[in-house]
Image (cartoon, rainbow, N blue to C red; front, side, top):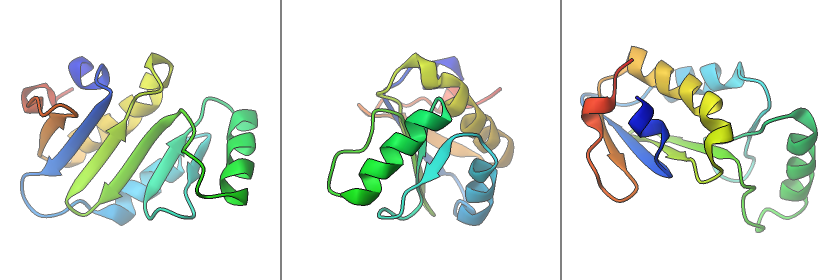
Length: 124
C-alpha cells in the first residue's frame, strides 16, 4: 500500500464489474475538508483545513476555468478511480482513507501514472 501512496498519479480499475460511485461518494462525503467539484462530475478535492478549502472553493466557483488547487484529487467513474497526489506527502492521510476503502471493497488492477503495475501493492 505504501508504494501506491508514494506515486504522483494512480489509476484503479475494478477487475470485475464497476465501481459503485454512490457508495464511494458517500464514503468521501464523510471525510473532513473535502469539496465535491461543481463543474467536473465525481471529482473531489481534499484539503488540509477549512480555511484553505473555503478560499479555493471561492476561487473555483468564481471561475471554473482556473487550474485546480494543489491538493489531493480523486476522480471517480464506473471503470476507474484516479488519484492525483502531486500535492505531496502531507495529503497521504486523505489518500490512505480512500485507498483503504477501495482495498476493503474491490479487487482492482492498479497502475501508476507512468504505467507501472502496482496491483501487488493493493493490500492492507
